[in-house]
Image 1 (spheres, protein in one colour):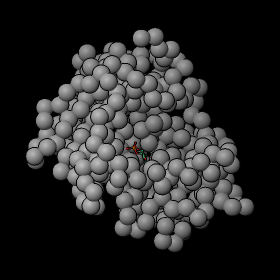
Image 2 (spheres, rainbow, N blue to C red):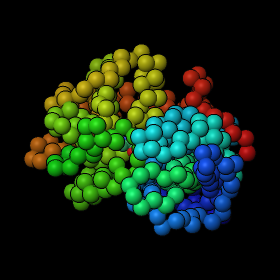
Image 3 (cartoon, protein in one colour):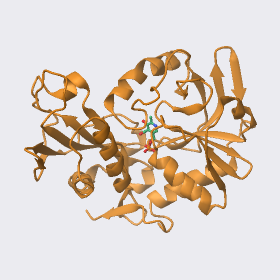
Length: 336
Ligand SMILES: Cc1ncc(COP(=O)(O)O)c(C=O)c1O
């Protein structure tokens, strides 16, 4: 093992092992550690044909004190359960989910980037229908996997603002669809608009509500947040994935004395915001300077990172990396 922690990006890398649990005849087994990163799967598995697949994303950090902290795995367990219910898959009990995550992190602790590098161990729990069906119906067998891979620090030398674009003609989800759960099919549908955005030079794209294209839903892989005076504003659309980063930042914002508004946000409001950010596990918070749509451009703020965005970001990473008190009890501590 010879990893240059300072040049790590956000790419998959094999580690020592993943953990795998199987659900058969109505119950989950004890799980096992697997060194081979390949799965031997039935050709009729429902995840392959009917998209019975959902996943999660969270991180473990090596603290300044040497301690390993996993950020809010109980929240990811709950969200995976809601994805499982929406796609008629067997739910992974919360304690089993947390045990599996802890097990995968412990077994791969040598892959957790050191505190000084600013990197983290990205954790990817995956739940799939692995039993064979030919008629469209749910599987009777499920496989739950937790794999991990080390990822680098995206921000070296300050938050990096980006410009975003709305790609007209593409919706992320439908009213009554699966936008509020983390199922694989949502991401298949998002690949093409994300690619079009990249070809036009934009690292992220913004989705408006699919009924009227009037209200903001979220970015491709992150929630939309805005700052106006002393308020933290975020859409409360039914089609948005409930981001655990957003939920945590809302609590931190309240702790900072800010007002939190979760409400429908019209796109026309954006020009009145002091700052806009995209939030999610991957980078915590990315400031958004401009949003393009067709021929029009909406400019936000004055081109500098808003001090409240920076404060939200700093407070969040301090909790994750154990440099301030974790007063909401968010981190699960793991010993090597
Ligand atoms: C569509 C979408 N929205 C928001 C998020 C951010 O969620 P979280 O903060 O839980 O990572 C993600 C990433 O998981 C996502 O894929």
